[in-house]
Image 1 (cartoon, rainbow, N blue to C red):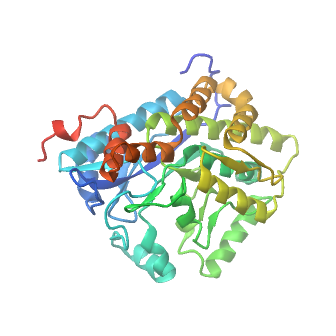
Image 2 (cartoon, rainbow, N blue to C red; image 1 turned 180 degrees about the vertical axis):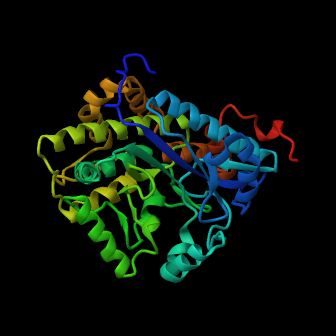
Image 3 (cartoon, helix red, strand yellow; image 1 turned 90 degrees about the horizontal axis):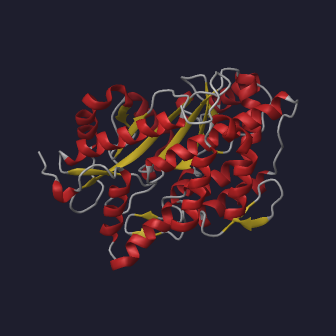
Length: 383
């Protein structure tokens, strides 16, 4: 338990899922060998590792934890295990929201009836599914309360996206965006922020309408950036690119939980959250995806253009009471200081490319940051 953290169930449990891309150890190009990595990592991680919709992707999961310190340890353990498993097969995994090198379109999809239904429904949208996010689950068993908390969180989603922007490249091309993953994801019929809703019943009715309209294959394809989890009593925040380091993913989890707590306090005071102008939300998302933390963002509530750093600092200030209660304030504020010096993930990817003008250097840098305690490729011998 972190120093200063108050014991007790008033601090919600957390869980985190991270997605990674599998690349060739020498060329840095995408390779459809995720199944090999999963098989070789399973002895170390058990059910905490699995595949994803494409054969390029591996996913790791944490157990539910009260302490962000424990979350961070499990994230680092998961990254180390999949990286070691990949290296043993002449592969690597990288924590990037989008691929840097290799043929990404169309991606080879995992087989199964559900995937076939998805292809029949979404067609060409499946062509750009080689993208990786991080999902933060916050314990919230009261579904009515969770929906109202979501109303408060919606306005903060673009700032969370900017903080984690880590996908500037689409194979062999700099897109000019900090988070290209979020741009591609926004094309889906049920993506981006959820609508303003006032009860779990209304949430379920809305989902039923989307199912009837053919916009969803099943409840697992509710791809909103904020949703009630289908399988767990949690509120799931899905807006972020996968950060390049486990430390950043843990800090994001701490911030998301704190925002859930302070939003829950507002709900308990009778505040159902702001009804935002959809055009401003769309604008705020676009600016966050373009600029990340290296430029400006849009306040989704007012439409004001502000430095991304100012929006982030304001968000952390809002979350500070809950961060203090959980003992996580130092972790999140250190993350902001780190971003101010080194830049977001997209900035770091471009800096790696600028050194020698080689995109293979970008992949090398991401792989090293993904699991820094795992030996480099030069020290590893493929099985």
